[in-house]
Amino acid sequence: MGKPSDLSSSAFSVVTIHQYRVLYEKCVQLINSEWPRSYNARLRSLEASRDTLPTSMVVIKNTDSINETTSVLAHARLSPVPSDSSAVFIESVVVDRRFRGQGLGKLLMTEVEKHCFSALHLKTIFLSTIDQDGFYIKLGYQFCKAINMFGTHCALNNSTKKIWLRKSVM
Image 1 (tube, rainbow, N blue to C red):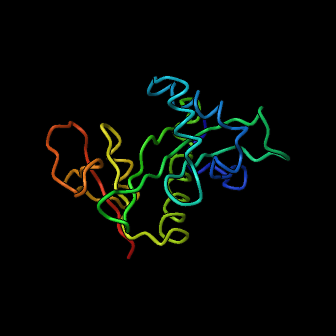
Image 2: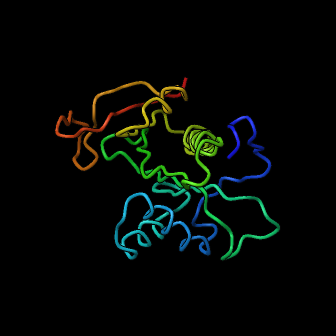
Image 3: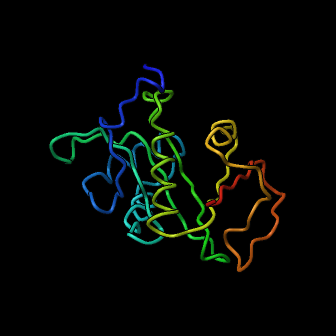
């Protein structure tokens, strides 16, 4: 495996998965390799991806054409925050174990941020992690209080072992 500095961004692309439905199968396999769940539940989540939120973005290796043999190397899902239309919650961030440590996570998050701040004109990104806070801190995220993703307001949620982070547009 190479080092992050060995990564040539021209060798990879970050795309929204709903533009390439042929990638659904590989994406389900990637996410389930980290967090097993029913195939149909994962597929429904990917099928909900659209130009607005929610959106699933994936890293693929550049090839002449995207087809069923194209590998999905990383994934992130962008979900709306019910109480704040100017915010997004990033979840299910995963990089294929075989490609970790090569800069694909950084590439994915950089493109996700561009999409959130420039294309969607959002102001804040929230995410949570159990063990990758160091990675996100290096990308400029800051610790914050937990948010409630299911209610009508962002409330403190102390019942989780997750670490919550946020990044806001300058």
